[in-house]
Amino acid sequence: MKTLTISRKEIAAITPQDVEKLAIRLEQDNYSNAFEGLNDWHLLRAIAFQRPELVESYIHLLDLEPYDEA
Image (cartoon, rainbow, N blue to C red; front, side):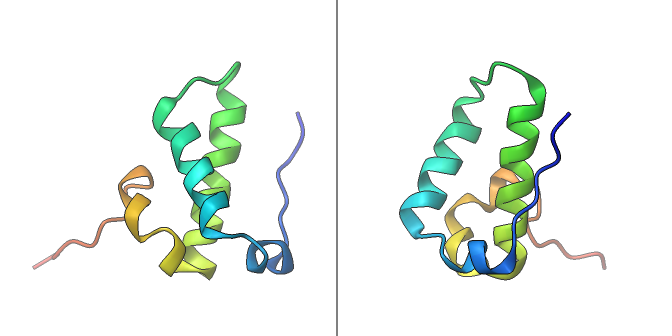
């Protein structure tokens, strides 16, 4: 199994259009195997932590929506 690795430099080069394409793939969930979808999910998650402004519209795909623990 191949491990997904992406550098900060690569994430810095990602455009909003790249994130949109990634989100569309995740929403369609039409992967040939589970690992492809998991790799896309991890990529979107990495982008969310380093460039959160790019994933605001797609945060629902990560289940990272803010909530109140009180």
